[in-house]
Image: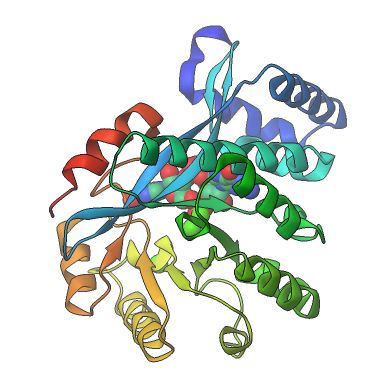
Length: 279
Ligand code: C2E
Ligand code: CA
Ligand code: CA
Ligand code: CA
């Protein structure tokens, strides 16, 4: 498996569903990976196309398995979730993202927020706000530079609990984004009840701008909804200039996607923060 390189995740995925033995094996290797520090973060810029400035970056975890190379999160997050390893892994991601962002700011780079994906499991932990607070204190990152991304299904699974936890998180001064917006839940009432700052339009709609009238309608409706509720809105998965134009015409000014940049190693970020990315 050594020289299969970065495609090796195709080798992991069947394994996750097939045998218990294989799953336990992956679990054992994930445990070792945590101990040996084999995880790393890539960052994908979020651009304000009105100014060209990078206003944020999403932290995306990867596993650098010494035997097989870079493994994408789809190949190990599900097993990490099932095995309880997601707790320590998510804590590492949160701490590393905050630490790195503070280091960039300390180096004099233009400040931007960092977005961290929360797992469903992590969001079931009652003391998540306490953890976030202690990591902010420990790293010295100002709360307005941290955003957490949650999905609608995570919130709606237990809405009573979620409203309490989101209020606690929001009270820290961090922001909350709804990831994959439009794919999850049909009732929009929760947007009023929950302290949500930003809607992240799911890639499945954005990618079919120019190809599907329905997806264009949904995209336009989400942007309009965000504006009328005075929420921020960002489009993910922007790959073409015509998608960009469509979004810009409807006043969706923040965008993320391969058109601007793929997720990249931390050392590529300072240059981008410095220069911006005019579209
Ligand atoms: P997500 O949160 O929806 O992250 C966006 C995914 O879309 C990333 O995949 C990113 O590389 C990809 N992407 C970004 N722009 C484009 C584009 O223009 N075109 C296309 N085709 N794809 C684009 P990635 O890094 O493989 O992450 C996959 C998923 O794994 C994430 O989906 C997220 O749900 C999860 N994930 C990643 N990092 C973490 C983490 O630290 N913790 C948790 N709990 N989940 C994570
Ligand atoms: Ca995300
Ligand atoms: Ca997403
Ligand atoms: Ca679609």
